Image 1 (spheres, rainbow, N blue to C red):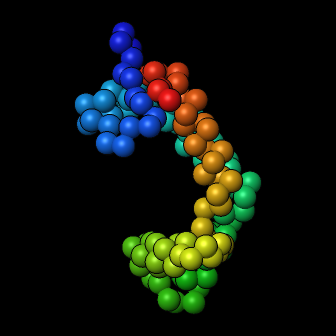
Image 2 (image 1 turned 90 degrees about the horizontal axis):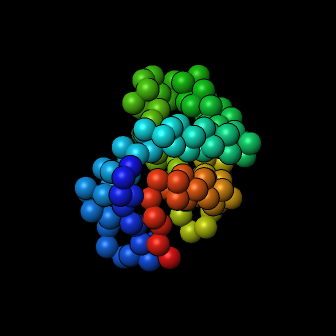
Length: 118
């Protein structure tokens, strides 16, 4: 990328779509997106979140409460939304530590392709 985009961290306005597109293309080109996905997946696995999700979905199908992927997805989204309220940390809420660690991975990937302001 000849002229890397500048992305001020403290900016309150959304990043323009053209800059978002440049960033996405650069992350695709340098393999950043798969690295971010792999880091997120690994941290979720380490935290037990992936297993909790798998167990919950398995229980939905075995109980007959859900019979399709779409029904199960709606139940998962509903459960995550309920568990994330009022500070309740349920088994399907992504742990804060995972979010913080992955945010660091994202920042490093962004710093590799653009100028990230303070």
